[in-house]
Figure 1 (tube, rainbow, N blue to C red):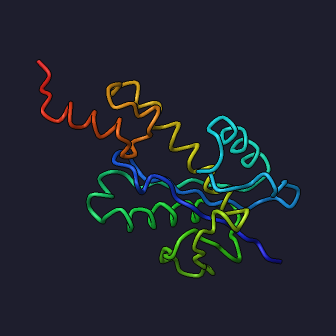
Figure 2: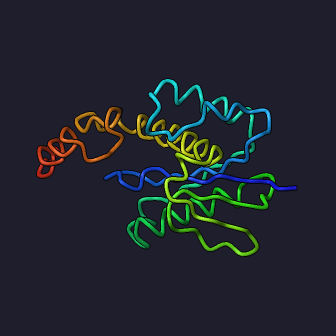
Length: 175
């Protein structure tokens, strides 16, 4: 029997925080028409879909820390987060579809990269939603401590607002 997992990461383009990845094995009963690339879904709807996916799937999240990103680079950290998510799944998939053009190195797994997979493969779309909601939740939490950067709105991505805040606070020294 084929057991397919979809994998996607989030946070690779962010200027702050860890990178997150999710691996998702969808139950047959899930409504695949609801699943799309997380970037195309409104924030509140994404949260609802994430809960729906988690209740109707086998899923896991993996992360790679800022220290790991700095040590091994963002691409390798993304692949590490994916590997961690895959290894945490409670059921071993027979096939793993990964968004993008790179796959993590994992022995005894059948991995395949799919460019724009989050737009084509429902399990990858589900993984993109779960990973994005999880990372956004963490960033929103730390945004309370660092209010001037508006991370609760930009999630650390290089928006004009965020870049302006970086310039403003770059030489700030607390008294």
